[in-house]
Amino acid sequence: MSKKVVYVACGGAVATSTIAADKIRTLLKENNIDAEVNQCRISELTSYKDRADLFVTTAKVSKDYGIPVVHGAPFITGIKQDKAEQDVLIALSE
Image (cartoon, rainbow, N blue to C red):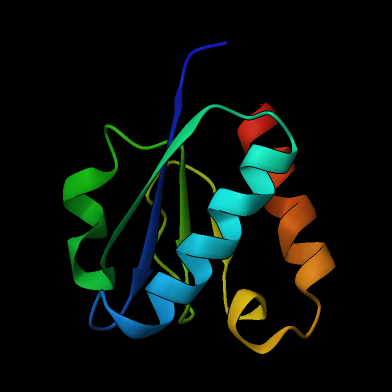
């Protein structure tokens, strides 16, 4: 399986995306998934859609990018994080 590419996005590409990206890197490593995890602003997602396998956003987005989008707030709050982790793993196994 080729290396997966994940973009973790928040409004400013700093605070919440850093926390979520770190947790996603750990999750993927624990599950032996070879992936590059990058951070960006939500406004930049369209420019990355052709090279990404998954977007994780810390704010709700309704746009269809043509790839899976997982709501990443649970990586910040801890609420329903197990479900978000499963959503990420499922999206990257497709």
